[in-house]
Each structure stands twice: as C-alpha cells, then as structure tokens.
Length: 102
Image: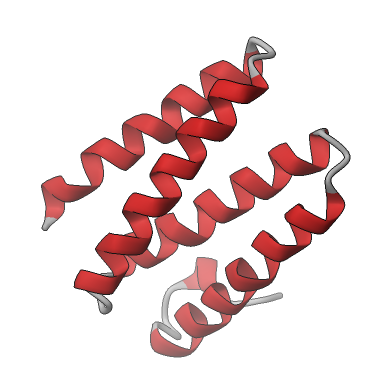
C-alpha cells in the first residue's frame, strides 16, 4: 500500500501551490480529491498510520482554506473529525510524540 499515497500527496502539493498563487478554486478541488482518496485508503487499510494522519492533515488544510474564504462553518465541520482522528492516533500510538498533547 505504500505507493497508494502518491496520488493524493501530489494533489495536496498542487493545492499548496494553487493556494500560494491565489487560485482558491484549484486548491479546493485538489484538496477535495486528496481527501476523497485518503478516505478510501483509510477505509481499505484502517490500521495504516500514515494514511490516517494524512487524512487528518488534509482535513486541516482544507479547513484552513475555508477559513481564508470566511467559511467558518465548513472549516469547523472539517476540523472536528481531524481532532477526533488525532485523539484516536494518540490512543493507538501513545509512543509517537507528535500525536500527544502538551
């Protein structure tokens, strides 16, 4: 499964470039495509730490883009599952420092 992440990762990178150049439409499209792909990967490989973390990070990236557009409701809808995912990751992988709070 390690090569499965290449495509959504490319979409995230494209989104970062689009956001930096002010192309919000392309950034949102690429992040949504990445989000959909990561959701499928997590569904197929639910115990893959990298996929679960990438899904949460993509939700955060998309939420920040919504905040930039003053769409707080959509941002919050994405941030809540990202927060939950990190709580689950902290529980599943307690020795991984980046998943623990404080």
